[in-house]
Length: 259
Length: 259
Image 1 (tube, helix red, strand yellow):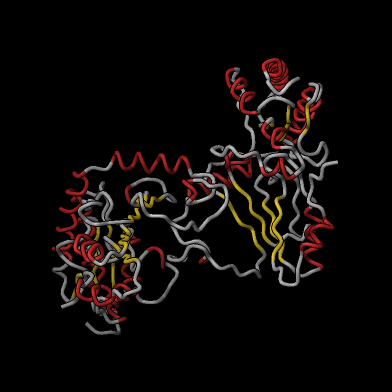
Image 2 (tube, chains in turn green, yellow):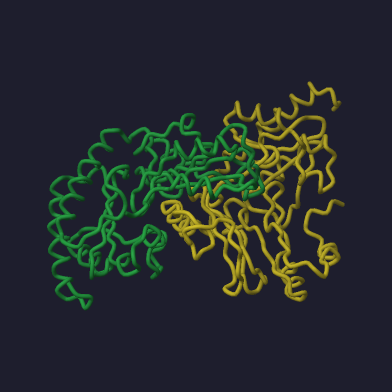
Protein backbone atom coordinates (compact mmCIF):
# COMPACT_ATOMS: atom_id res chain seq x y z
CA UNK A 1 0.00 0.00 0.00
CA UNK A 2 1.48 3.30 -1.09
CA UNK A 3 1.18 6.32 1.17
CA UNK A 4 -0.05 9.10 -1.09
CA UNK A 5 -1.34 11.55 1.53
CA UNK A 6 0.65 13.43 4.15
CA UNK A 7 0.90 11.09 7.16
CA UNK A 8 -0.39 12.92 10.24
CA UNK A 9 1.67 10.81 12.64
CA UNK A 10 4.81 11.51 10.63
CA UNK A 11 3.94 15.20 10.64
CA UNK A 12 3.59 15.23 14.43
CA UNK A 13 6.96 13.53 14.76
CA UNK A 14 8.58 15.99 12.34
CA UNK A 15 7.54 19.01 14.39
CA UNK A 16 10.38 20.03 16.71
CA UNK A 17 10.56 22.63 19.46
CA UNK A 18 11.96 25.23 17.06
CA UNK A 19 9.49 24.57 14.22
CA UNK A 20 7.67 27.80 13.37
CA UNK A 21 5.88 26.88 10.16
CA UNK A 22 4.39 23.85 8.46
CA UNK A 23 3.85 24.14 4.72
CA UNK A 24 1.91 21.43 2.90
CA UNK A 25 0.61 21.35 -0.66
CA UNK A 26 -3.18 21.07 -0.69
CA UNK A 27 -3.75 19.44 -4.06
CA UNK A 28 -0.69 17.76 -5.53
CA UNK A 29 0.19 18.97 -9.01
CA UNK A 30 1.39 15.59 -10.27
CA UNK A 31 -0.83 12.96 -8.73
CA UNK A 32 -3.86 14.99 -7.67
CA UNK A 33 -3.75 14.00 -3.99
CA UNK A 34 -5.89 16.26 -1.83
CA UNK A 35 -4.13 16.43 1.52
CA UNK A 36 -6.12 16.57 4.78
CA UNK A 37 -5.46 20.25 5.51
CA UNK A 38 -8.10 20.46 8.23
CA UNK A 39 -6.35 17.79 10.29
CA UNK A 40 -2.92 19.26 9.50
CA UNK A 41 -4.22 22.68 10.48
CA UNK A 42 -5.52 21.31 13.77
CA UNK A 43 -2.14 19.82 14.62
CA UNK A 44 -0.47 23.15 13.84
CA UNK A 45 -3.02 25.13 15.86
CA UNK A 46 -2.59 22.81 18.84
CA UNK A 47 1.18 23.24 18.68
CA UNK A 48 0.90 27.01 17.99
CA UNK A 49 2.75 26.74 14.67
CA UNK A 50 1.85 28.69 11.55
CA UNK A 51 0.26 26.63 8.78
CA UNK A 52 0.76 27.51 5.12
CA UNK A 53 -0.82 25.59 2.31
CA UNK A 54 -0.14 25.87 -1.40
CA UNK A 55 -3.63 25.66 -2.86
CA UNK A 56 -2.69 26.58 -6.43
CA UNK A 57 -4.07 23.31 -7.77
CA UNK A 58 -7.08 23.00 -5.49
CA UNK A 59 -8.38 26.59 -5.42
CA UNK A 60 -12.01 26.64 -6.65
CA UNK A 61 -11.86 22.84 -7.05
CA UNK A 62 -11.89 21.82 -3.39
CA UNK A 63 -13.73 23.82 -0.69
CA UNK A 64 -11.33 25.70 1.58
CA UNK A 65 -12.48 27.32 4.81
CA UNK A 66 -9.61 29.36 6.23
CA UNK A 67 -11.18 29.39 9.70
CA UNK A 68 -12.25 25.78 10.00
CA UNK A 69 -9.19 24.47 8.16
CA UNK A 70 -6.91 26.47 10.49
CA UNK A 71 -5.04 27.92 7.53
CA UNK A 72 -2.83 30.91 8.39
CA UNK A 73 -1.34 31.47 4.94
CA UNK A 74 -2.77 30.33 1.62
CA UNK A 75 -1.15 30.54 -1.83
CA UNK A 76 -3.43 30.58 -4.87
CA UNK A 77 -2.85 31.41 -8.52
CA UNK A 78 -4.63 32.57 -11.59
CA UNK A 79 -3.72 30.46 -14.60
CA UNK A 80 -4.90 27.22 -12.98
CA UNK A 81 -8.44 28.61 -13.02
CA UNK A 82 -8.32 30.03 -16.56
CA UNK A 83 -7.01 33.45 -15.52
CA UNK A 84 -3.90 35.07 -17.02
CA UNK A 85 -0.46 33.59 -16.38
CA UNK A 86 1.96 35.24 -13.96
CA UNK A 87 -0.47 36.24 -11.20
CA UNK A 88 -1.01 34.76 -7.80
CA UNK A 89 -2.12 35.76 -4.34
CA UNK A 90 -0.99 35.06 -0.82
CA UNK A 91 -3.92 35.19 1.58
CA UNK A 92 -2.81 35.67 5.14
CA UNK A 93 -4.25 36.25 8.57
CA UNK A 94 -4.32 39.93 9.56
CA UNK A 95 -1.98 39.46 12.51
CA UNK A 96 0.82 37.83 10.53
CA UNK A 97 3.77 40.08 9.77
CA UNK A 98 5.93 38.99 6.85
CA UNK A 99 9.43 40.06 5.91
CA UNK A 100 9.31 41.10 2.26
CA UNK A 101 11.62 39.56 -0.33
CA UNK A 102 11.48 42.67 -2.53
CA UNK A 103 12.25 46.06 -1.06
CA UNK A 104 11.65 49.48 -2.54
CA UNK A 105 8.54 51.36 -3.49
CA UNK A 106 6.34 49.94 -0.74
CA UNK A 107 3.71 48.51 -3.10
CA UNK A 108 1.17 45.90 -1.95
CA UNK A 109 1.30 46.99 1.66
CA UNK A 110 5.09 47.01 1.67
CA UNK A 111 5.21 43.28 0.90
CA UNK A 112 6.23 43.34 -2.74
CA UNK A 113 7.85 46.37 -4.31
CA UNK A 114 7.21 46.90 -8.01
CA UNK A 115 4.42 48.25 -10.17
CA UNK A 116 1.54 45.80 -10.02
CA UNK A 117 0.49 43.64 -12.98
CA UNK A 118 -2.89 45.37 -13.06
CA UNK A 119 -4.43 43.61 -16.05
CA UNK A 120 -3.31 40.26 -14.65
CA UNK A 121 -4.79 41.00 -11.23
CA UNK A 122 -8.11 42.09 -12.71
CA UNK A 123 -8.10 38.99 -14.92
CA UNK A 124 -7.50 36.75 -11.89
CA UNK A 125 -10.47 38.31 -10.07
CA UNK A 126 -12.65 37.85 -13.14
CA UNK A 127 -11.56 34.21 -13.44
CA UNK A 128 -12.69 33.66 -9.84
CA UNK A 129 -16.11 35.01 -10.80
CA UNK A 130 -16.44 32.82 -13.87
CA UNK A 131 -15.52 29.37 -12.51
CA UNK A 132 -18.43 27.36 -11.09
CA UNK A 133 -19.11 24.29 -9.01
CA UNK A 134 -20.69 22.78 -12.10
CA UNK A 135 -17.31 22.89 -13.85
CA UNK A 136 -15.85 20.85 -11.00
CA UNK A 137 -18.64 18.28 -11.17
CA UNK A 138 -18.23 18.00 -14.92
CA UNK A 139 -14.47 17.44 -14.68
CA UNK A 140 -14.88 14.93 -11.81
CA UNK A 141 -17.26 12.82 -13.88
CA UNK A 142 -14.96 12.79 -16.90
CA UNK A 143 -11.94 12.03 -14.70
CA UNK A 144 -13.65 8.99 -13.17
CA UNK A 145 -14.56 7.70 -16.60
CA UNK A 146 -11.03 8.28 -17.85
CA UNK A 147 -9.47 6.51 -14.88
CA UNK A 148 -11.86 3.52 -15.02
CA UNK A 149 -11.25 2.96 -18.71
CA UNK A 150 -7.47 3.50 -18.69
CA UNK A 151 -7.17 1.09 -15.76
CA UNK A 152 -8.57 -1.64 -18.01
CA UNK A 153 -5.15 -1.68 -19.71
CA UNK A 154 -3.14 -4.52 -18.14
CA UNK A 155 -0.12 -3.68 -15.93
CA UNK A 156 -1.20 -0.12 -15.37
CA UNK A 157 -0.80 1.77 -12.12
CA UNK A 158 -3.00 4.66 -11.05
CA UNK A 159 -0.59 7.10 -9.42
CA UNK A 160 -2.27 8.84 -6.54
CA UNK A 161 -5.61 8.02 -4.95
CA UNK A 162 -8.98 7.26 -6.49
CA UNK A 163 -10.81 9.20 -3.75
CA UNK A 164 -9.79 12.65 -2.49
CA UNK A 165 -8.26 13.44 -5.85
CA UNK A 166 -8.32 16.72 -7.79
CA UNK A 167 -11.18 16.75 -10.28
CA UNK A 168 -8.88 17.49 -13.21
CA UNK A 169 -6.03 15.06 -12.58
CA UNK A 170 -5.31 11.54 -13.78
CA UNK A 171 -1.83 10.02 -13.62
CA UNK A 172 -0.80 6.54 -14.68
CA UNK A 173 2.30 4.42 -15.04
CA UNK A 174 2.41 1.82 -17.76
CA UNK A 175 4.82 -1.00 -17.06
CA UNK A 176 7.67 -1.52 -19.56
CA UNK A 177 7.29 1.73 -21.49
CA UNK A 178 8.37 5.35 -21.16
CA UNK A 179 5.96 8.18 -20.54
CA UNK A 180 7.88 10.39 -22.95
CA UNK A 181 7.17 8.00 -25.84
CA UNK A 182 3.45 7.89 -25.03
CA UNK A 183 3.34 11.68 -24.94
CA UNK A 184 4.93 12.04 -28.35
CA UNK A 185 2.48 9.58 -29.88
CA UNK A 186 -0.50 11.26 -28.19
CA UNK A 187 0.73 14.61 -29.44
CA UNK A 188 0.53 13.31 -33.02
CA UNK A 189 -3.11 12.52 -32.32
CA UNK A 190 -3.73 16.05 -31.06
CA UNK A 191 -3.74 15.16 -27.35
CA UNK A 192 -1.49 17.27 -25.11
CA UNK A 193 -0.27 15.44 -22.00
CA UNK A 194 2.77 15.40 -19.74
CA UNK A 195 4.98 13.36 -17.45
CA UNK A 196 6.00 14.91 -14.15
CA UNK A 197 5.29 18.59 -13.61
CA UNK A 198 5.49 21.43 -16.11
CA UNK A 199 8.07 23.09 -13.86
CA UNK A 200 10.61 20.36 -14.51
CA UNK A 201 10.08 19.94 -18.25
CA UNK A 202 13.78 20.29 -18.92
CA UNK A 203 14.83 17.73 -16.31
CA UNK A 204 15.47 14.10 -17.15
CA UNK A 205 15.27 12.96 -13.52
CA UNK A 206 12.28 10.80 -12.55
CA UNK A 207 9.54 12.72 -10.71
CA UNK A 208 10.38 13.19 -7.02
CA UNK A 209 6.67 12.86 -6.25
CA UNK A 210 6.35 9.48 -7.95
CA UNK A 211 9.51 8.08 -6.37
CA UNK A 212 8.33 9.38 -2.98
CA UNK A 213 5.09 7.41 -3.19
CA UNK A 214 7.12 4.29 -3.85
CA UNK A 215 7.44 3.97 -7.61
CA UNK A 216 10.68 2.60 -9.00
CA UNK A 217 12.57 5.05 -11.23
CA UNK A 218 11.59 2.87 -14.20
CA UNK A 219 7.86 3.03 -13.38
CA UNK A 220 8.16 6.75 -12.66
CA UNK A 221 9.58 7.22 -16.15
CA UNK A 222 6.58 5.32 -17.47
CA UNK A 223 4.16 7.87 -16.04
CA UNK A 224 1.57 9.82 -18.00
CA UNK A 225 -0.35 12.75 -16.59
CA UNK A 226 -3.68 13.63 -18.16
CA UNK A 227 -5.15 16.93 -17.05
CA UNK A 228 -8.78 17.71 -17.69
CA UNK A 229 -10.30 21.08 -18.45
CA UNK A 230 -13.82 22.34 -17.99
CA UNK A 231 -14.38 22.35 -21.73
CA UNK A 232 -13.41 18.73 -22.29
CA UNK A 233 -16.18 16.46 -23.55
CA UNK A 234 -17.13 12.80 -23.17
CA UNK A 235 -16.20 12.32 -26.83
CA UNK A 236 -12.70 13.61 -26.13
CA UNK A 237 -12.36 11.21 -23.21
CA UNK A 238 -13.43 8.29 -25.41
CA UNK A 239 -10.96 9.36 -28.10
CA UNK A 240 -8.18 9.73 -25.52
CA UNK A 241 -8.84 6.32 -23.98
CA UNK A 242 -8.83 4.68 -27.41
CA UNK A 243 -5.61 6.46 -28.35
CA UNK A 244 -3.81 5.58 -25.12
CA UNK A 245 -4.81 1.93 -25.45
CA UNK A 246 -3.50 1.72 -29.01
CA UNK A 247 -0.24 3.50 -28.18
CA UNK A 248 0.52 1.49 -25.05
CA UNK A 249 -0.07 -1.74 -26.93
CA UNK A 250 2.15 -0.63 -29.79
CA UNK A 251 4.97 0.59 -27.56
CA UNK A 252 4.89 -2.53 -25.39
CA UNK A 253 5.41 -4.68 -28.48
CA UNK A 254 8.55 -2.66 -29.24
CA UNK A 255 9.78 -2.43 -25.65
CA UNK A 256 13.07 -4.07 -24.64
CA UNK A 257 11.75 -4.13 -21.05
CA UNK A 258 9.40 -7.00 -21.87
CA UNK A 259 5.66 -7.27 -21.82
CA UNK B 1 24.74 75.53 -7.04
CA UNK B 2 22.82 72.33 -6.45
CA UNK B 3 24.44 69.02 -7.26
CA UNK B 4 21.85 67.08 -9.23
CA UNK B 5 24.07 64.42 -10.84
CA UNK B 6 26.03 61.67 -9.11
CA UNK B 7 29.38 63.22 -8.15
CA UNK B 8 32.18 61.06 -9.57
CA UNK B 9 34.70 62.14 -6.94
CA UNK B 10 32.21 61.31 -4.17
CA UNK B 11 31.61 57.93 -5.82
CA UNK B 12 35.34 57.15 -5.89
CA UNK B 13 35.61 58.05 -2.22
CA UNK B 14 32.57 55.91 -1.34
CA UNK B 15 34.10 52.76 -2.87
CA UNK B 16 35.81 50.72 -0.15
CA UNK B 17 37.99 47.62 -0.33
CA UNK B 18 34.97 45.37 0.29
CA UNK B 19 32.64 47.10 -2.20
CA UNK B 20 31.39 44.56 -4.73
CA UNK B 21 28.64 46.48 -6.53
CA UNK B 22 27.76 50.04 -7.43
CA UNK B 23 24.11 50.67 -8.30
CA UNK B 24 23.09 54.04 -9.72
CA UNK B 25 19.80 55.13 -11.23
CA UNK B 26 20.27 56.15 -14.86
CA UNK B 27 17.38 58.59 -15.31
CA UNK B 28 15.91 59.89 -12.07
CA UNK B 29 12.16 59.30 -11.74
CA UNK B 30 11.46 62.59 -9.95
CA UNK B 31 13.74 65.21 -11.41
CA UNK B 32 14.74 63.63 -14.74
CA UNK B 33 18.50 63.75 -14.11
CA UNK B 34 20.42 61.56 -16.53
CA UNK B 35 23.43 60.33 -14.61
CA UNK B 36 26.82 59.88 -16.34
CA UNK B 37 26.74 56.08 -16.44
CA UNK B 38 29.67 55.81 -18.86
CA UNK B 39 31.98 57.58 -16.41
CA UNK B 40 30.52 55.66 -13.46
CA UNK B 41 30.94 52.42 -15.39
CA UNK B 42 34.58 53.29 -16.12
CA UNK B 43 35.31 53.86 -12.44
CA UNK B 44 33.72 50.51 -11.61
CA UNK B 45 35.60 48.71 -14.35
CA UNK B 46 38.91 50.19 -13.20
CA UNK B 47 38.20 49.07 -9.65
CA UNK B 48 36.84 45.67 -10.79
CA UNK B 49 33.45 46.27 -9.19
CA UNK B 50 30.13 45.26 -10.72
CA UNK B 51 28.02 48.13 -12.02
CA UNK B 52 24.23 47.97 -12.01
CA UNK B 53 22.03 50.73 -13.33
CA UNK B 54 18.29 51.12 -13.00
CA UNK B 55 17.34 52.33 -16.46
CA UNK B 56 13.56 52.03 -16.02
CA UNK B 57 13.05 55.72 -16.74
CA UNK B 58 15.70 56.12 -19.43
CA UNK B 59 15.21 52.95 -21.48
CA UNK B 60 14.46 53.87 -25.12
CA UNK B 61 14.77 57.56 -24.17
CA UNK B 62 18.55 57.75 -23.70
CA UNK B 63 20.99 55.62 -25.72
CA UNK B 64 22.56 52.86 -23.64
CA UNK B 65 25.53 50.84 -24.87
CA UNK B 66 26.18 48.03 -22.42
CA UNK B 67 29.75 47.56 -23.67
CA UNK B 68 30.87 51.16 -23.91
CA UNK B 69 28.97 52.22 -20.78
CA UNK B 70 30.55 49.34 -18.83
CA UNK B 71 27.18 48.21 -17.54
CA UNK B 72 27.18 44.73 -15.99
CA UNK B 73 23.52 44.64 -14.92
CA UNK B 74 20.67 46.71 -16.32
CA UNK B 75 17.09 46.94 -15.04
CA UNK B 76 14.40 48.01 -17.50
CA UNK B 77 10.62 47.89 -17.39
CA UNK B 78 7.61 47.79 -19.61
CA UNK B 79 4.98 50.29 -18.50
CA UNK B 80 7.33 53.25 -18.80
CA UNK B 81 7.44 52.63 -22.55
CA UNK B 82 3.71 52.02 -23.02
CA UNK B 83 3.89 48.26 -22.41
CA UNK B 84 1.76 46.42 -19.85
CA UNK B 85 2.26 47.01 -16.13
CA UNK B 86 3.99 44.44 -13.95
CA UNK B 87 6.77 43.36 -16.33
CA UNK B 88 10.45 44.15 -16.28
CA UNK B 89 13.76 42.67 -17.31
CA UNK B 90 17.18 42.37 -15.80
CA UNK B 91 19.83 42.31 -18.51
CA UNK B 92 23.08 40.87 -17.25
CA UNK B 93 26.46 39.86 -18.52
CA UNK B 94 26.74 36.16 -19.29
CA UNK B 95 29.41 35.50 -16.71
CA UNK B 96 27.47 36.93 -13.77
CA UNK B 97 25.95 34.34 -11.46
CA UNK B 98 23.05 35.59 -9.36
CA UNK B 99 21.51 34.07 -6.25
CA UNK B 100 17.76 33.88 -6.87
CA UNK B 101 15.27 35.46 -4.47
CA UNK B 102 12.54 32.98 -5.46
CA UNK B 103 13.23 29.27 -5.34
CA UNK B 104 11.19 26.43 -6.73
CA UNK B 105 10.27 25.46 -10.26
CA UNK B 106 13.47 26.65 -11.90
CA UNK B 107 11.77 29.07 -14.30
CA UNK B 108 13.70 31.80 -16.13
CA UNK B 109 16.99 29.93 -15.98
CA UNK B 110 16.53 29.17 -12.29
CA UNK B 111 16.52 32.89 -11.42
CA UNK B 112 12.85 33.44 -10.72
CA UNK B 113 10.53 30.55 -9.92
CA UNK B 114 6.91 30.96 -10.93
CA UNK B 115 4.86 30.69 -14.11
CA UNK B 116 5.83 33.57 -16.36
CA UNK B 117 3.50 36.49 -17.14
CA UNK B 118 3.48 35.50 -20.81
CA UNK B 119 1.11 38.14 -22.17
CA UNK B 120 2.98 40.82 -20.23
CA UNK B 121 6.35 39.68 -21.55
CA UNK B 122 5.09 39.60 -25.15
CA UNK B 123 3.54 43.04 -24.64
CA UNK B 124 6.84 44.40 -23.33
CA UNK B 125 8.68 43.11 -26.40
CA UNK B 126 6.04 44.65 -28.67
CA UNK B 127 6.30 47.99 -26.84
CA UNK B 128 10.07 47.95 -27.54
CA UNK B 129 9.27 47.55 -31.24
CA UNK B 130 6.74 50.36 -31.32
CA UNK B 131 8.62 53.18 -29.57
CA UNK B 132 10.75 55.37 -31.85
CA UNK B 133 13.47 58.00 -31.68
CA UNK B 134 10.92 60.43 -33.13
CA UNK B 135 8.79 60.03 -30.00
CA UNK B 136 11.79 61.08 -27.90
CA UNK B 137 12.45 64.13 -30.10
CA UNK B 138 8.81 65.12 -29.91
CA UNK B 139 8.70 64.87 -26.10
CA UNK B 140 12.03 66.74 -25.75
CA UNK B 141 10.72 69.65 -27.76
CA UNK B 142 7.51 69.89 -25.75
CA UNK B 143 9.43 69.57 -22.47
CA UNK B 144 11.73 72.47 -23.36
CA UNK B 145 8.75 74.60 -24.24
CA UNK B 146 6.98 73.64 -21.02
CA UNK B 147 10.05 74.40 -18.88
CA UNK B 148 10.77 77.73 -20.57
CA UNK B 149 7.21 78.95 -20.13
CA UNK B 150 6.67 77.71 -16.58
CA UNK B 151 9.96 79.32 -15.53
CA UNK B 152 8.47 82.68 -16.50
CA UNK B 153 6.41 82.41 -13.28
CA UNK B 154 8.24 84.41 -10.59
CA UNK B 155 9.86 82.55 -7.65
CA UNK B 156 9.85 79.23 -9.44
CA UNK B 157 12.60 76.64 -9.20
CA UNK B 158 13.34 74.08 -11.90
CA UNK B 159 14.16 70.92 -9.96
CA UNK B 160 16.84 68.94 -11.76
CA UNK B 161 18.95 70.05 -14.69
CA UNK B 162 18.02 71.76 -17.93
CA UNK B 163 20.53 69.69 -19.92
CA UNK B 164 20.94 65.93 -19.59
CA UNK B 165 17.35 65.59 -18.52
CA UNK B 166 14.83 62.89 -19.44
CA UNK B 167 12.73 63.94 -22.44
CA UNK B 168 9.46 63.40 -20.57
CA UNK B 169 10.20 65.04 -17.22
CA UNK B 170 9.64 68.52 -15.86
CA UNK B 171 9.66 69.26 -12.12
CA UNK B 172 9.18 72.62 -10.45
CA UNK B 173 8.88 74.11 -7.00
CA UNK B 174 6.72 77.16 -6.53
CA UNK B 175 7.66 79.26 -3.52
CA UNK B 176 4.98 79.73 -0.83
CA UNK B 177 2.52 77.09 -2.06
CA UNK B 178 2.01 73.36 -1.74
CA UNK B 179 2.35 70.98 -4.68
CA UNK B 180 -0.66 69.00 -3.47
CA UNK B 181 -2.93 72.05 -3.86
CA UNK B 182 -1.67 72.71 -7.39
CA UNK B 183 -2.30 69.07 -8.31
CA UNK B 184 -5.89 69.17 -7.10
CA UNK B 185 -6.60 72.32 -9.06
CA UNK B 186 -4.93 70.95 -12.20
CA UNK B 187 -6.93 67.75 -11.84
CA UNK B 188 -10.14 69.82 -12.02
CA UNK B 189 -8.89 71.14 -15.34
CA UNK B 190 -8.26 67.63 -16.62
CA UNK B 191 -4.47 67.67 -16.16
CA UNK B 192 -2.97 64.73 -14.25
CA UNK B 193 0.27 65.55 -12.42
CA UNK B 194 2.12 64.51 -9.28
CA UNK B 195 4.46 65.54 -6.52
CA UNK B 196 7.25 63.16 -5.59
CA UNK B 197 7.16 59.68 -7.06
CA UNK B 198 4.15 57.46 -7.70
CA UNK B 199 5.70 54.85 -5.37
CA UNK B 200 5.30 57.13 -2.35
CA UNK B 201 1.81 58.45 -3.09
CA UNK B 202 0.65 57.52 0.39
CA UNK B 203 3.56 59.19 2.17
CA UNK B 204 3.37 62.75 3.53
CA UNK B 205 7.14 63.09 3.87
CA UNK B 206 8.87 65.50 1.50
CA UNK B 207 10.61 63.81 -1.43
CA UNK B 208 14.02 62.40 -0.43
CA UNK B 209 15.27 63.28 -3.90
CA UNK B 210 14.32 66.93 -3.60
CA UNK B 211 15.73 67.34 -0.11
CA UNK B 212 18.93 65.56 -1.28
CA UNK B 213 19.50 68.16 -4.01
CA UNK B 214 19.23 70.88 -1.41
CA UNK B 215 15.58 71.95 -1.33
CA UNK B 216 14.11 72.92 2.01
CA UNK B 217 11.23 70.69 3.15
CA UNK B 218 8.88 73.62 2.43
CA UNK B 219 10.09 74.00 -1.16
CA UNK B 220 10.03 70.21 -1.62
CA UNK B 221 6.37 70.25 -0.60
CA UNK B 222 5.80 72.92 -3.22
CA UNK B 223 7.01 70.66 -6.03
CA UNK B 224 5.02 69.72 -9.10
CA UNK B 225 6.05 66.98 -11.51
CA UNK B 226 4.75 67.14 -15.05
CA UNK B 227 5.38 64.02 -17.12
CA UNK B 228 5.03 64.12 -20.86
CA UNK B 229 3.82 61.38 -23.12
CA UNK B 230 4.46 60.74 -26.78
CA UNK B 231 0.89 61.66 -27.63
CA UNK B 232 0.93 65.06 -25.94
CA UNK B 233 0.48 68.05 -28.25
CA UNK B 234 1.68 71.65 -28.35
CA UNK B 235 -1.90 72.72 -27.60
CA UNK B 236 -1.90 70.65 -24.43
CA UNK B 237 1.38 72.24 -23.33
CA UNK B 238 -0.08 75.72 -23.92
CA UNK B 239 -3.21 74.80 -21.96
CA UNK B 240 -1.10 73.34 -19.13
CA UNK B 241 1.15 76.41 -18.91
CA UNK B 242 -1.88 78.72 -18.83
CA UNK B 243 -3.53 76.57 -16.14
CA UNK B 244 -0.43 76.37 -13.95
CA UNK B 245 0.09 80.14 -14.16
CA UNK B 246 -3.50 80.83 -13.11
CA UNK B 247 -3.44 78.33 -10.27
CA UNK B 248 -0.09 79.43 -8.86
CA UNK B 249 -1.22 83.04 -8.89
CA UNK B 250 -4.50 82.18 -7.19
CA UNK B 251 -2.89 79.96 -4.53
CA UNK B 252 -0.18 82.50 -3.76
CA UNK B 253 -2.81 85.12 -3.06
CA UNK B 254 -4.34 82.76 -0.50
CA UNK B 255 -1.03 81.51 0.94
CA UNK B 256 -0.14 82.24 4.58
CA UNK B 257 3.52 81.80 3.60
CA UNK B 258 3.58 85.17 1.83
CA UNK B 259 4.02 86.13 -1.78
